[in-house]
Amino acid sequence: MPKTILIGAPIDTGQRRAGCLMGPAAYRVAGIAREVSSEGHGVQDWGDLVLPELKPVTCPNPAVHDLAETVAWAEILMDRVDDALSQGGFPIIMGGDHSLALGSAAGAAAYAKRQGRPLFLLWLDAHSDFHTPLTTTSGNLHGTPLAYIAGRDGFDAFPPFPIPVPAHRICMFGIRSVDPAEQAAMQERDIAINDMRVIDERGIVAPLREFLALCRAEGGMLHVSLDVDFLDPTIAPAVGTTVPGGTTHREGHLVMELLHESGLVTSLDLVELNPFLDDRGMTARLMVDLVGSLMGKKVFDRPTRSK
Image (tube, rainbow, N blue to C red):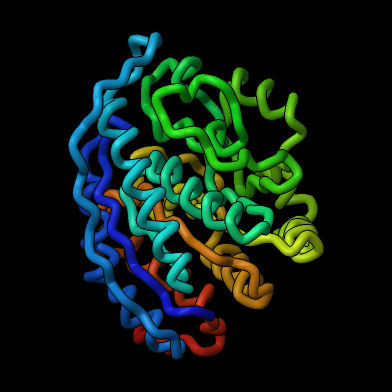
């Protein structure tokens, strides 16, 4: 695996519950650089991004808030992720709320476009995030990145997405909270929605392996966006949008081990960690542990903990 590049994205503007801006610091305190290097990978920390000067932007939906900030974050993240990939790196974007994927996925798509390779997207999240700035009723733009990536209309304030990712290259995994309007829009595009019922019936492995096989067959790059609420809130409480019935500790590690074995992942988001809501750092540590599995750590490598 290429050298890992850590990029801090202290973004809090995609939703209204303060705290996600502390995410990058929490990942560092939880030892993310040490976890990556312990698996034999080089690691470089590019520090935290700083919000650039804001441009005047407008949206006809009065519910939308912090649009100028969200656009500015998306633009700088697009550039920085593209830079990391262009330097042969494996960027891990430490968030920050899920609006950061507006920029990180765009950066991955810009790089993939220049390489002449298709971008695939694995969305590990309780929510579909398929609203647009025009359809959101909450005004929270962390609920919009997948719609932007898939090419929905309504993102005039944002840079054009380099090449919208077609439905068959998007896999939503662990979904269990979708608005009716989002569901209708997704069904129009025939995106693979592996909700918790699918996972309960088929297991974690089969649908994920099918998607990875498709990515491999098309020579794709794979951007993974991991939201804390993909995990069950009993093991990962540090998120402002908890939904019961998430993946277990074992399932989370299995997903990451399968991704490591595939060798297809080229960039990773870690989003929605709100350390203010955590219980003695347990969520940050679990997320870092999952990164370890993505980097090659096996379940049997883990030390026994004293009772």
